[in-house]
Length: 92
Image (cartoon, rainbow, N blue to C red; front, side, top):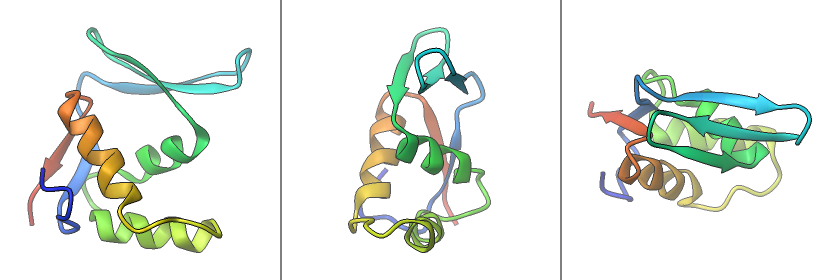
């Protein structure tokens, strides 16, 4: 994924699921090869990654919820998960 590509539509890879551990108060992405602890902001991004919304639409939605969402944050988060095989993207 090009980190500047805001038109892609991300979604979790089929073998990945997000869980919340109430005892620890943290979210994690789980797969057979991956356990990745993410913060609440990361969980908000993952919840919006449904292969329907583009990265630009996800960024706009997060800006409506939170005061500070820096340009490129969503792209970097998605690109990192794609690299780790935790997320897939669809073009167009």
